[in-house]
Length: 75
Picture 1 (cartoon, rainbow, N blue to C red):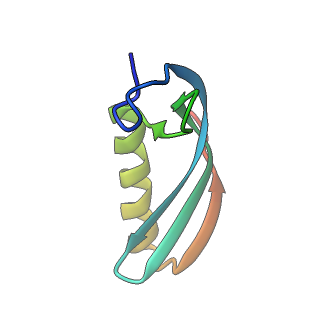
Picture 2 (tube, one colour; picture 1 turned 30 degrees about the vertical axis):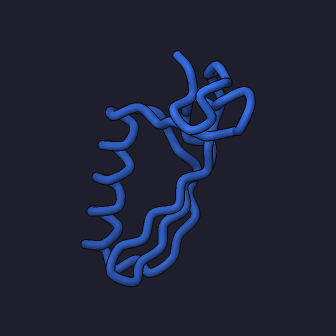
């Protein structure tokens, strides 16, 4: 698959740092599995991984978290 941003690079397995903000809360996830463009560095996170991140954000919001940095842990 080619990168949809630069249209030149191929994608390779790697990791990303994902920052999500919601109603003033900020969560940073490190080492999230992603496909990364070899040319421009654009990162693509799988739908299933994104769903897990969003569920974690919901749990954090329920717990009253304001700012947090977490290592991504695969299921």
